[in-house]
Length: 483
Image 1 (tube, rainbow, N blue to C red):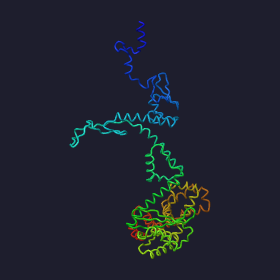
Image 2: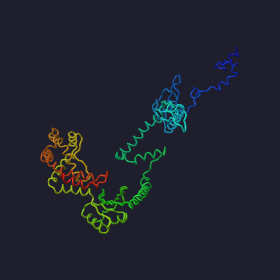
Image 3: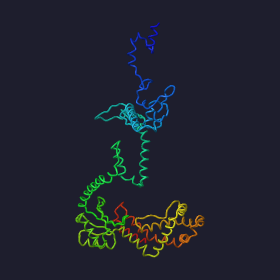
Image 4: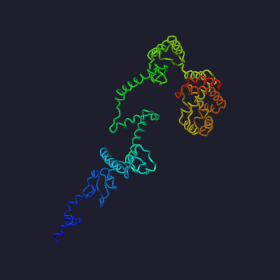
């Protein structure tokens, strides 16, 4: 009896000793779960505590959240995959990465076991050949293969990346907003390529510093531009090119002359000259243009395009006398802009009408209360419409006034205007009388009928969508007839 009790205590599984010979062999064959009580060797248990009477719930050591699902759910909680459990907010990045590697490895192994016929992870369904046979050199009979559709589990990458992409996009958008970067920058080719290269580098990429952007990387880009310019120079020798010059004034009131070279291969910026200290006489302009022609190569230059000002015109004639094989051509956009300038400055009707229209827009835009009142009647539309040039803007603004004629009249007849302090001032009464004057609106229409045909041609020649040389003469003839 004592012997039986001793055996029972030593053999809790009640396996007959006589049949097994000993229990050691069977115990060694039996597989013990690594998550079983007393044998929790899973790496996840280093970061969680078993709680509850039955020990089936687990508590995170970092955020102290308690949930069911065991160590499997704890690892997803620490990795932040959002798979059936929320992400831990207190775990360190190092442990988060460690857990992410663990759950990713488990998912990859699972996909390898469940994939059939080489189904790739992330595919919802895939057609497979259940026969597993291929016939080489023979026609395949369509009845040989049975096509079935198998579903694959959602990969852990898809779950995690959905939330990770949102975090990345928030950081990128904050960079745009906080630094005043225009949104259309995201449409550039460089924007997409920048992220592609960073992703190819992988984890641990450090963006360029202020010094790198300012010195070594800038020098590198200058070298790349010079290399690209050599390709254009070779093309100029084959088909010829056009030199274009454009003058402008920067914020420091310096006069800058830009020189560009155009060919069927594209337009490239060649150089700029600070002409602030230079008296822009015909001789000085001729000297600068002649030096650029020499740099590009006289044999490569077909024409030189400049503004139509008197000094540039004289310089162009001097250039053609010296360089017999090239032509000087005035800029078509500048010619049309000068026509609009003549209309505004030399035709009394246009001059007075534009002056009145400008008074209306400046009076309203200088007072926030009137801007709010205007937007109520125009449904958010503004009265000023920027154009390609200053004189184009004048006529486009007249067009906006004409489009919002009814809204402006209703605004100055409304109770909000008549009861406001502005309606009692001298300037307010003058502006109201102009808006309510029927003659003014008739004059606006007359001005637009004369200017809009020229604006149409200006848009065409100032656009880069298609070459305008083949259309400009016909368009100018059409504009004259419309005027």
